[in-house]
Image 1 (cartoon, rainbow, N blue to C red):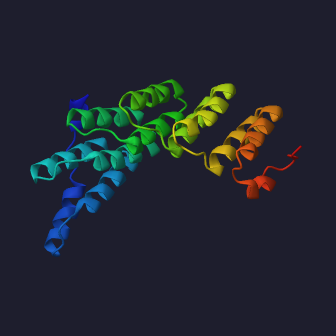
Image 2 (image 1 turned 90 degrees about the vertical axis):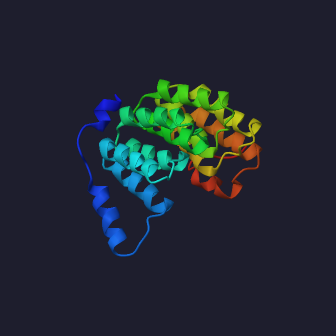
Image 3 (image 1 turned 90 degrees about the horizontal axis):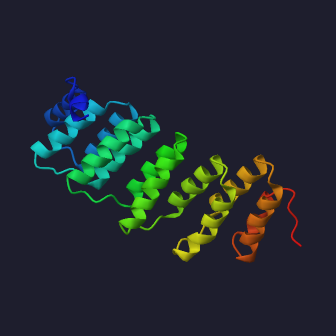
Length: 214
C-alpha cells in the first residue's frame, strides 16, 4: 500500500513553501498542519505522504497533530483506506495516538456507516489507556443508534460519567432525536428523565417538545 501512495509526483506544496521562502516567511508547525489538513480534505494522499517525508528531511519530525489533521481531512473526504494507512504509519513512526486522533478515526468510520470498525478503534483506545471524551462518546452513541443498538447507546450514555465524562446537551439531544425518529418515544423519554434526574441542562428541557415532567 505504501507504494500506492508514493505514486505520482505531486509537488504543489513545494511551490507554496518555495514562495513563502522567497517572501521571507519560514513555515511553522501551524503551516504544515494546515497544509496536511487541506491535502487530506482534497483527497491527495500521495502529496500528503510527500509532505510528511519532506518534514522529516528538514528535521521536523511529524507528530500526532500532523497526522491527526491529515486523517481528519481524509475522513471528511471519505477516504477511509488512506485514514487507516496514515494511522498505521503514525504508530510505526512512534507517535502514540491520543484521544483526539482516535475520535477522528471513530467519527470517520461512523459517518461512513462502518460501525464495527469504529468499535474496534474505540476498544483499542481503551486498551491503550486513552479515555474517551464527550465527542468520542457522541460519535459512538450515534453509531450505535445507526445500527439499531439503542439499548447499548443508552447504556453508553450512562457509562460516560463512570469514566469521568459528563454528557453535554448535544449528546442528550442527539440520542433523543434518533430514538424519536426510530419511533421509540418511550425510550427517548427515559433519556430525558435520566438527564433531569441528573440535574443536567434543566434550562434546556423545553427544547424537547412534547415532553412533560411527572
